[in-house]
Amino acid sequence: MLKNHRLIILAIGILIVISACNGPQKVLKSGNNELKYETGMDLYEKGDYNKALQFFDLLRAVYRGTDKGEKLTYYTADCYYQMRDYQIASYYYGQYVQLYPRGEFAEESAYLTAYCKYLESPRASLDQTSTFLALRELQSFIDMYPSSPKVAEANRLMDDLRYKLEIKNYRIAVLYFRMGDYQAAITSFENLMEDYPDTEFKEEVLFSITEAYFSYAEKSVFTKKQERYEKTVEAFNNLRYLYPESVYLPVAQQYNEKALYNLKKM
Image 1 (spheres, rainbow, N blue to C red):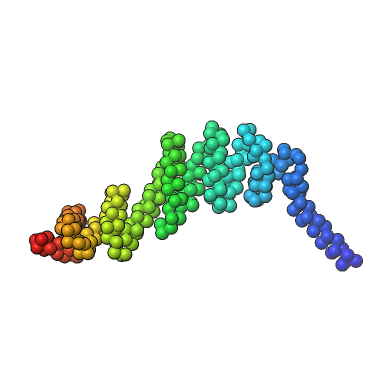
Image 2 (image 1 turned 90 degrees about the horizontal axis):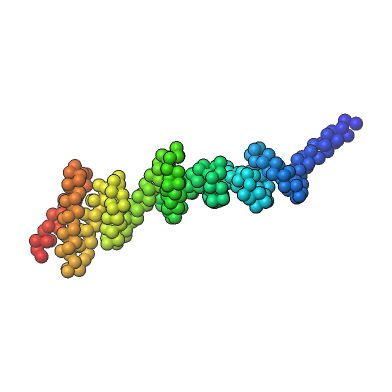
């Protein structure tokens, strides 16, 4: 008797689980859009974002241009955001801004479109296409909502991204130098100085330019040597003027003296 009682309880438990699992699926297959909407929103509120998206994906086109359509688009974006799928979240936040530019969540969605791009930006050693996209989206948000309280944060995020690009460009220049491609190294270092005049690598860059010009001159044909030795002296003077206490000066001074000596012989 006790064994039968336990079996009955187990069967009831299984039926409850099956019913709970099949409930939303039955609603999903029904023709009742209002019930689908309420069910999807209920799943969203419970944090079941994957299941909620099944309903939202069916209903966005049905309710497009309405208050419910506006909420469905925003909550679709938020589902992906909560699941950390930032690429798709950014897409739907952007879609919300396009479809509902005066909507309740327009400003927030414009910011989150950019913020998701920011979160996608990889470390400096990798391709920075996403970083440039994030910068563009953040600037677009600032232009669109210049009085937003989020502008300060957007500017901070842009500074973070620019610093990442600065590091990337510095490392590329150093790599060219180590490979012995002095012309590419010099161009990269000089572009870095132009693009980021306040770069924290300025002292190292000025020394590297001095070293690169001297090494380049040493390996150049005779007709090019004079110009590149002169550039060595010029780069050294820039380093000495801006950083008179630089730890790089003793070595840079040696390049300078050798360059001057070779120029006198010409």
